[in-house]
Length: 178
Image (tube, rainbow, N blue to C red; front, side, top):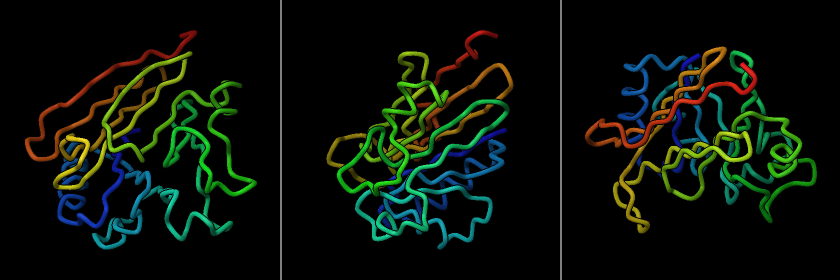
């Protein structure tokens, strides 16, 4: 499975459109929007989408819309969330990332919120933040997006600088116990 990751689009529709088109040229089977203006994806007409709202969006307080979800791709359990940890705006029944991580109920956490593109591996869990798609960001990071190739025994994660399409960060992980 090939997953395209975007986050924190903040109404930068042209950049979102560019990122999705680029991720599709890489072979993305699905696009995942990790919040903050996740309805931006509706404006470009993308259909094969999985998405979670940002913690300050109106949708985050709608119990019928999942704020976090776990999906399984080629045996890998991935938590999709706007934040890497619980947030003050969480609803009582929301999944708690800390619990999922501590009890090893997930193999990876894909999240946004910080606007900092990052790939890390801690305590046997892979953490991926594709960054943001704003033209300028006060934290100084360029607009980036992510591409994850999930195979039965490996997960290859690449973050791309949107404007140049160069690899910003890349990591390959082998499933523990394989």
